[in-house]
Length: 406
Image (tube, rainbow, N blue to C red; front, side, top):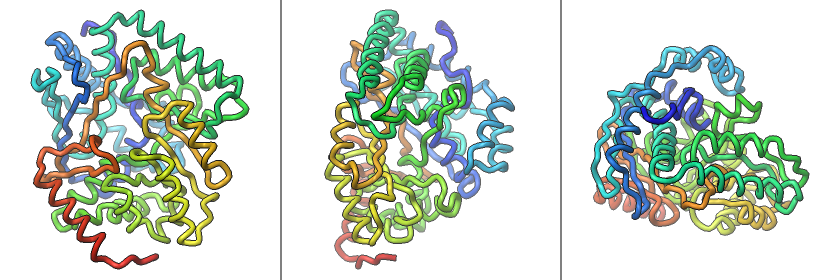
């Protein structure tokens, strides 16, 4: 490696990977998935030198193991079970699961294939590695970190003056961070900032949460709904949310319950988020579409079930900055609990635009899977015919199925 190791702990991933990982271990340990990398930036190119560095960094990541301090930390999280911690004691990433080539419009293609237990864990460290390699090798990193620190200092100054109303907010930027140094700098500064009008509650980065005694934040991602709902040949994919919610409640009961709404459109999600699940889950997460329209829809949904929206959390996590979050909070304040997960704006705010890179599940158990977001451009599937099939299944259900409140 030409750079220092980027991932230095297996805890250096988002909390929802462990939340989902435990449920995968207990219920879907035989599932196999394919994950595919995509760079959405049109003007970004990864050189041969960058690709080689990415390979070396991933090889280093695959040599890591959990230590007992890390395992003890996970074991003390309320909903993490000892059986899963024992599994992690034996677990290691496998470099053989990766295929990394110099292909595609951006000069980099990455795919992983193997058990869902393994491949799910690769997504976040891989994206963090790709980001940091790119920004250190394509730009003057010293200038970038200088601009990052200046912007961070300004954010902290404005926060300390209570110019923002963010309610409870967390840092969600690991997958698109400028660097490990930058993310830690931001988390440390926010944790130390004296705020009265807002509350910084934690970070999705479990390693930094442990280091700075913060709450590790994260429940489920789109992969959960896609794989549980679409990875079984016997399932109608229009019921993906029902299968996913049912499996989640089986694992966690009333704990760890924030449901993601837009995997196959929020409209379809609400068909399955009836009284039982709306009661059991503590709240819902927004990740695409207009946040105000979405929040109004969630409040109306809770009210239709005679559930007081003030007892539920609306978690917003789509491309937020402090100004957008404040506007959302002001709109819903007093009508529901409001929380925010803020990523790139905290972890990669510099004079250079952040990368828009993703790593998505594209197959499960040999079958195509897809996300149909509330907005165009956030989905990813290799087979247009499968997207058409999924859409037809959803359309038929929405037009022909009676709505039940149970």
